[in-house]
Image 1: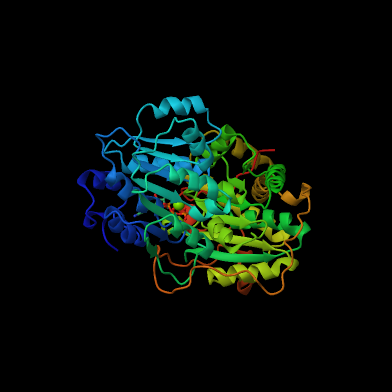
Image 2: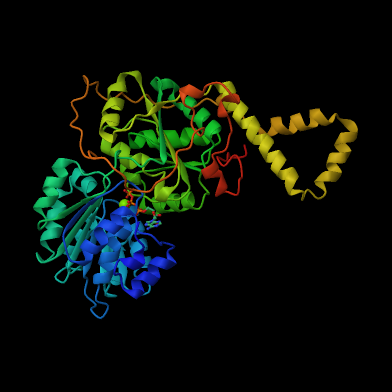
Length: 505
Ligand SMILES: Nc1ncnc2c1ncn2[C@@H]1O[C@H](COP(=O)(O)OP(=O)(O)OP(=O)(O)O)[C@@H](O)[C@H]1O
Ligand SMILES: [Mg+2]
């Protein structure tokens, strides 16, 4: 790995990079920063969470002429949340150089954006629809743009934004440099992309698998109507720090979030039908750990970088392998460990094979915990909480009450009662979730596997952990690993167990 200081980056930008805490460049950064600064067009493909934003961000920031008040860089991103996230990272990269950055996206008052555009931003990060709107209103002038970046290019082209993107691109001078990035790059998309670019250099970080190796991948075979109970048991046993649960449809997301709340989890849904203000506030609370579980549709979570996401659950197996890669890539970022669990109904098993063929990675079968095991998990958590509280030893006058009670009751009975009060047995609470139709059955594949073909290193290296999920091979032993804490996840919460909080009911 090379250090950023060896990449010919200006002192000013280097200072910002250092402030962000980055020392060594990731492989995609090493591969694209130099080329990007030489002015080359680039198609960049690397696994999720390996720093693609900074990979295009540094060449972009380096190229901005701060004496020029025109828009010089344009970044197009598929969702509002991603546009905001990317603009924040660019802001940090350009902080010492004082680069002015503005994000524009739908759902935000356009008049406010028009006013902000008058402050002469040098980089605009926007979603296709809103960018077009500004171009048509002539409130955004792109005549001086010399760098165009497409983040999550495949998603935008998939979403049917091709025409919009073409229109936006034709508003940018032909002499521009074009950079295009994504974790997955299906061939069809790459061909379209190349049409827009000038003899692009393809920088693909070679790796054996399409997914980073620090994500442990499991699948659970389950009939539709049992999925939710299994999910809640898994949550109790695996104790995620933060979790994202993916559902196939917006209705599904709403129902899941609702059902999780009924069962006592702190969960919120996020999808395209929610107002921008609501989406932002949900994400903000999730980032701050005020919400433990985010339930999302595919699109809503594209590219999102939220530290602390220890588990991803695919409540419905995604229809195509690319979306699987992007979904589970919300965990295991920047070298951290993660766990991904995918539910598959018996009729959808062929999709599992398709995903595995594309990612070149086998998922391990996870035998779902039984209801008893899940409760056992909760009991262990309660025990750990009591223990921790005792060790902290700041119990003050609680000890007076304790002494009083000990005079009347047996010590074992008292502790047992305390544990019972703290343990919740979720399956007592019934929930209803509409049946989702399984994906159409397909005979032995037919999906044209794409990408991720070559072998070698790349991405972050992270050692494999075992024991956070529950592979079938380790059925026996310590109560099925119930309530055990993941080393990685627990450390950043100060070892607080039971991170998956529940409402006090
Ligand atoms: N050189 C680096 N050293 C340490 N951390 C880094 C480095 N570069 C980026 N990161 C961090 O890694 C995380 C993931 O980066 P980023 O969001 O750019 O990933 P990505 O490759 O775009 O992923 P995705 O495919 O999901 O969009 C971020 O939190 C970022 O701050
Ligand atoms: Mg990204």
